[in-house]
Image (cartoon, rainbow, N blue to C red; front, side, top):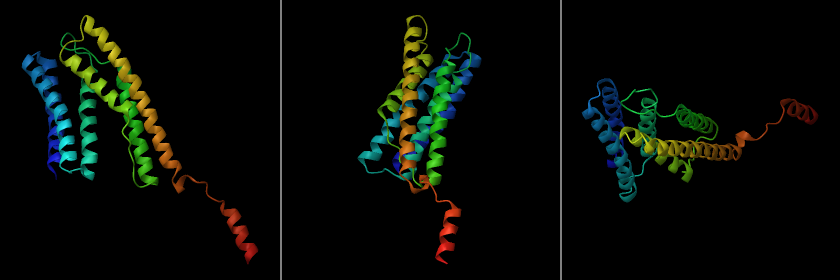
Length: 208
């Protein structure tokens, strides 16, 4: 349990606090709850860079960290996006359902692909993509704009453009990850065609 992994666990523990404070704000309209949600989201996002820096700078990269770090990112973003997908009246804006469907659909596709590759190949090699990183930044920007209530007036137009960009890059990154997964499966012997059993039995009979 390295220092970087401990920080990642703190990020994961901040997620339920963020969701609870956001729900309390939606129900009560208490601005302190909204500020607490914004603060917890900001701290979790900042710690994402901190644990990555510590892991690289102090040589604390571990197999556990390779699992926990992207898991913390996904849990934070998905929890925020799903919570903000509902109609909150005059309190907060709403994330378009088509963006939510694109994000969750891509993540489910990647998860299924990783399970299949792990089953047949044994080890999943994930290569980070620039499109995926930019898509994550745009998704976080959508969440922040709504939390800060910048999604009114001219801000609503910016939110629309950012959401469209996030959806496009999310879809592109999903296709790129799918292509990488297909190459991993294609290079493994398990993807090669097997010889029919009948042919093998015929050859054995001829030899005998």
